[in-house]
Length: 513
Ligand SMILES: [Ca+2]
Ligand SMILES: [Ca+2]
Image (cartoon, rainbow, N blue to C red; front, side):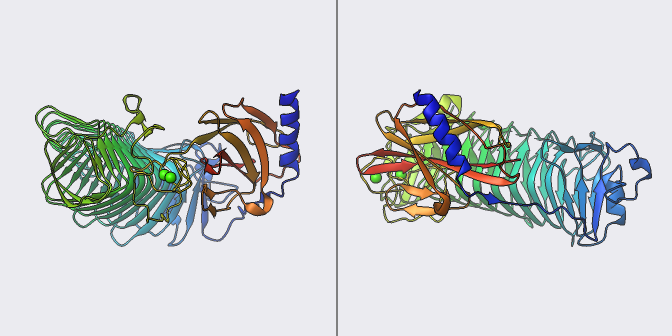
């Protein structure tokens, strides 16, 4: 009876919420070209929407500066050379695959060209096949933006995945399983002339024979909300990152990388490294600096160095750590700590949820919770996992930022099912037993900062509250009304309360389609 009543309330709650409706406009403009390898008539196509080309290269040949090339789902076995300022838009990162078939670099952008690629994958490039030896997936000499793009399974002497000489911006990208089998930069090599900006990117499972399994940097890198994990620098330096230039990382997780010599997570050699709210953990090296090996400038605050291993010296941090306060270093045996000692926790276990299983978020008892600068007000509003930042993790009614890229919340939201008209959804709330859970449902794009509970990302003007009871609670099943317009967005977020204290959960934003 209770479950039925809850489901009815859930349905009615969806039905009476005034959802925002987004109507997409796919009208063709002058300068739009269409490519669909699956169109049976594409061999005679003219690039119009009704008669698409088979190959992206055909569209590049006729496109002018400013044009947009729309590429349908499919496997496109070709190498792309972009010397015009165009946008190439795929059907989705898992749907539109540009496959180099190991015949050369998959994507080359020439100097002076501004290009954008979105919603596709670049795979199976090999720069050593008659080309430059640099950049198996991408060789960029221009201004290139990749958004929702994967670069995977590529190889080169330097820069197995991407090789950047100029301006490269990566957003919501995955750089995985690439190899620099000759020298450095398994995932990415950023040259001294290169400026690389990364947001919401994962650099995972890449390999370099010599150094910089994930990233080898000689230029300037700015990274926010990124994960660098499971990369390997086989023989020498920097399993995750090898730096000789300038790196500024915020909210970055560097875990489970390995180097054959020094700096399992990071090798900072002659460069400048600034790390804010980073976690460097679970990395290993054959010799010095399992987490970090630093022989230059390494400035950090609100960061965690723990659970790394080194066979010779300095499991967590070998060298000089220039503290800007609020760092946790579990093993300081080879660490010289200079700078501001405020809030540093040395020789302390940060208590990850399950580091061995790759979960480096904070357990409820972690000393890193609410251990940051109490005067700090973050403008990023979410942590690496999408949880609101800053939260009151210790429930003393004062929000204080946690150490590392993850903010601890007493409640987490998971939504499964199909976001279609009439589709069934299951909402699961997990969190601290005994706290009262409330489900918030409404339209998207709210961002209201509650002084005690954190940020609510459900639009307050359409907000409906739905009490779930005391944690633990059973999953809640609901149905999206069949009449819901396509493109409707629905935002869900949980609130856990105990006395006058509480935390909002991560939000889940659904688009009905
Ligand atoms: Ca906190
Ligand atoms: Ca607190």
